[in-house]
Length: 562
Image 1: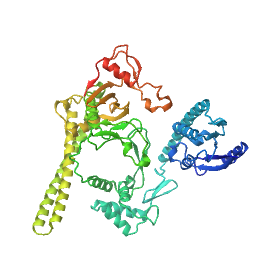
Image 2 (image 1 turned 60 degrees about the vertical axis):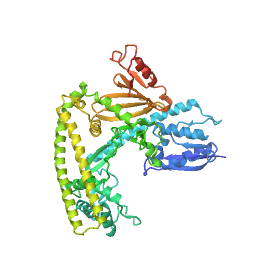
Image 3 (image 1 turned 90 degrees about the horizontal axis):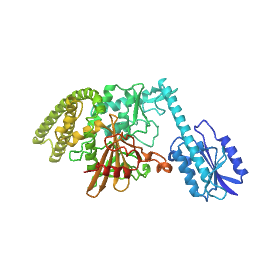
Image 4 (image 1 turned 180 degrees about the vertical axis):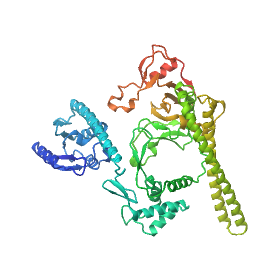
């Protein structure tokens, strides 16, 4: 008798598998199969397949273990089309047939071959399952929003110092006293290790109540950064966009907002004592994103200073295996800078620049206040050094102690001076915005420092997505905050660096990479949407590949040398 597995899934712990198990067992036995494996899953099919424990176990099966897997319906397996097709293909390659009871669909024929019509049908069903899953997620989100509006807890896991009762958040005074103590100690200047030692010395119980682990600096750091303690619980919503969506909800406060802000200010000042003055300022740091996996590109430490997909630096267990290509850092920075320099004269930017002027005035005033405060702090470093020198001359410090204290003061002073320098660079840009005649044209009247250019990039650019078109060719799709988009084509072969800049309103990027791999080749890279534009004649109109656009631009003398 052949062996079979049964995969059961319910969406929550209060549901049971009994009906699915009874009927699937009966079906398997009627078809002549011995059920040797049963997998009971409670994780939602909306989630990625790698996060579902029992599905992961089932995927380890081989044809030596089972010949067929029985499942109630396709929504039990996956509600994400890409995962659904991936799982089907994975078991097909192993020679294991999947049987869906509700529609009596088999992924393999009796001879063990894949039926193409069945595969197409399953692909369509997978898409409908994904649509149904997205509707389900929308309903769940709507339900959560309604519950939050009624004052329910913003989280299902209460932070240290709180407990949840009847879906509402309440203060646990036995724990809250230690929360207040941690903030007060940190405000007084005690470091994370000191607070950690105090908690462990006083045997403060952790939230988990586990006795085999102790408080560590990381846990204390998270506690001090949690905004719920001053009455604003933070909730980060999942978003397809690079930036996260963060919302705050009212919660019972354990400390004051002033105490929290004071501690956060100290944390930011103590974040690092490294001398970063010699590091190269990367204009696209935090802006350049992989168009395939969505991870940010990072500047490599190699001699060529390439931007590389952040996936290669990810934790091994979190790597996606993305193979998107790199691009030379100086080339990418310079070309993108040249693109945004020419944006200032656009009507769209002119209309929105008035609002930017008002924002800039407010920020300029704040920066000036901060600079004054930091200058006072600089003076305090000079006083500290004078006192240290006098104490050293009196023999109160050894040579090593004096050198160590002097180094600490110098590093502290250098850190504040760097912050002041950054604020002054920001103010130069803000003054240009305030005084400019509805554009940034005054910026081109002088040479900007790398720091100033970085400020402009952060203010103007929403995101830059990079796509690989072979060994040498790249596309940088630049989206600006004012609603404009540009396509930057590059072709870098050795010392020969060519590029093209095209307005996305004229040559529109269709982004075929976002489509399933099965249909990707059917989607053109670009569409020329305006046959009366200032770049091409009326004959250039329709759909084109990257290479075709490049050849057209060569004909119209639009390819430039870097």
